[in-house]
Image (tube, rainbow, N blue to C red; front, side):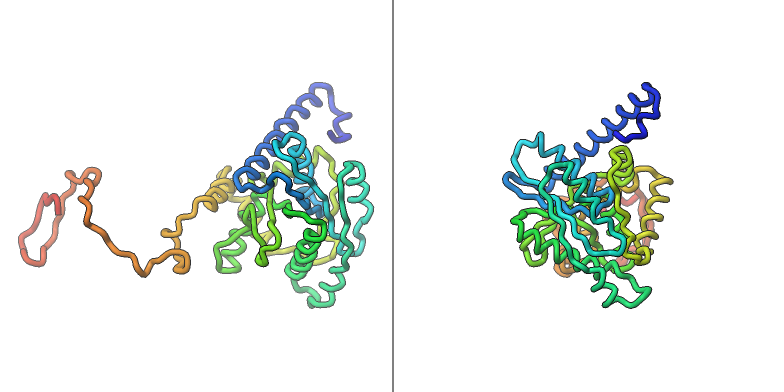
Length: 306
């Protein structure tokens, strides 16, 4: 628990501890369910846990280490951070923290900051190139250390935001999947926090007092598109709590015949089939039909069984 707990009364401290235990159990349960639903971690896996220094990746590592102790299977965890040499990056923070945990870890030193500044014009968005360089480096390093899974700290809110980001700005219906096989099929990416809400992660990280490293050290402008999406979803969730969960659930319940992608569903060759007996529709005996049939100009009233 955090040092601020010492300023609380015994009753307040007890209440805070109870609330934290509930939150921790909730996150453990959600991570465990995501791992089971998508078979994220298997016996003998060597999982490379990517640490950025943010609340999400710290929480992911903490929960995975906790689950590892009680899991019915054996698997390894390896923490990996990529030092991209942004000016002012506190290089000592993560090694000091990981040394305390006693976990196997590696710090990859690669000056992608200079590459990005060299290639991207001043004022333009740097996030795209930066993330590509980071992803390529991590994929390669996973092979170097014989990691079988790469764990990233994206949570449910991230995945829903990406869904809308791609719809609004990319004209495609896609998001971050909980489990992904890389294009070259050499790596599998998992997102153990897929069922976790960001607000719960924030609360957990605050109590745990992780040594958070800000993500804006490179000096790049904020990703305004994603921020706009985030604000929109936060307002929706405020107006109707649970809406984020509903949207995420819809990502797990896709009906291709109700969409419009001709490459995924054969719309062109749809054929009617009236060979079976027609079912009786609800309240069919209560309907009336008016009109002028093609062969009979007599008005039809109370027509049943067309």
